[in-house]
Figure 1 (cartoon, rainbow, N blue to C red):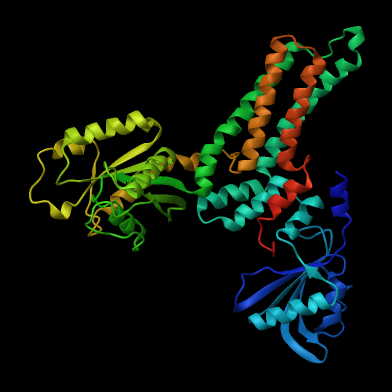
Figure 2 (tube, rainbow, N blue to C red):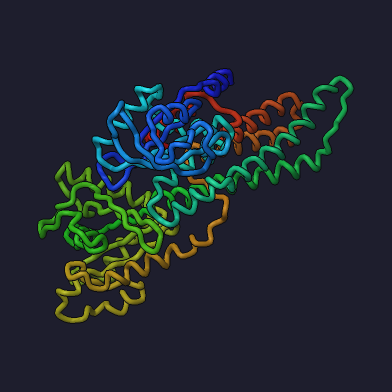
Amino acid sequence: MNSLLNLLQEDDTICALSTPNGSGAIAVIRLSGTKAFSICKSIFVPKNTTIDLEKAPSHAVYFGSLMSGDEIVDEVLLSLFRAPHSYNGEDIVEISCHGSVYIQQQIMQLLLNNGARLAKPGEYTKRAFLNGKMDLSQAEAVGDLIAANSYSSHHLAMQQMRGGFSSKIKDLRTQLVNFASLIELELDFSEEDVEFADRTQLFDLLDNLEVETSRLVESFRLGNVLKNGIPVAIVGKTNVGKSTLLNALLNEERAIVSDIPGTTRDTIEDTLVLNGKMFRFIDTAGLRDSEDIIENYGIERTLQKLDQAAIVLYVFDLNEITIEELNETLADLSRQFNLEEKKVILIGNKTDQLIEIPHHFVDLVEHETIFVSAKRKENINLIVDSLLKTVENTDNTPETIVTNVRHFEALTLALQDLQRVKQAFADKVPSDLIATDIRLALHHLGSITGEVTTDEILNNIFGNFCIGK
């Protein structure tokens, strides 16, 4: 904890480009720290010469010129945010300049020459956490929000950033603290053999904590899918048109297409956002017996991706498949993988090559097969409709859902701690031993929101942020 206090005492003024690298119409450079206003005052000449930046009102924008000696570097807008009413609780100046790379470099050099230093990755948000403007899970949500590329991932990140997830964790921790207080009180009077805590109430509280924590742990599977994309494996034998189907779905030539069987020897992944939900399509190597070592490795990868997929598009050639072969293949896959937990969509491809309706057409219809020509991009919309129908219930996800691996791991450990406490009570284990597991559960829950943390954890989290955030 001392190291965190040292971090709080840092008064370096930091600067960084907050817009993407490269030229554009405008760029934004952010300056944060105790000297932010004085540094800008030394290089900024306001259009209204009566304005003193160090005394100017907060949350206002000022127009003027940035000067390097007697030379004008650029005409800019300065947005002022005074502590503690700013993003990270410090004095912040945001400089909106023209987007020339040369101008950006000149302004950055001016700031460095006048006492600022370059910000480290995520340092603005790290300071927001250290200054109590947000807890650790909210700070992590900032990074998720920046990376959001679908409605689902944006919604989850926004809900977490606004404190919904934090409130749930803090509520669980408060309940556990009350529980721990009663146990610790008993330890203080252990010689008198006094029980301050009603055992029935304690069991009820433990049950509630276990149920709530378990629900959060289980929500990670859905949360991870919504955040990173719903995995859809395109599976089938060689040369049935899997790569052609991937290209048709993405509407671009993403995968190499050839009449030669076994062209795809490794998995090819790409994403597509449909109605605000991101799908992660995985084109796989064709399933067949092969003596080619590389192709067999690709088939092994196919089976791994099939195991990870939430949705399976099983593609077959309408002109060659028999209903017996299809049923046998699905049965084989079901034996290897739990297909009951996956949505399997059958895709009968190559309708453009049909000479007559297959005699097993009725059976395929009963299997809810989607008939397409991937080559001509016919009926691809039916696959899209089926995909969206499969995930339509994800619109009703609970407000509190886990999307972060670190949070999932901490909650899993906390759940294990709670289960040990519950078992210990049942076995009438002494209170001092039970208290140890309670403290561990408190530690793991506290690590999520940052009530318990280390420099190593903070550096790992914020090191993944962009420099300007």
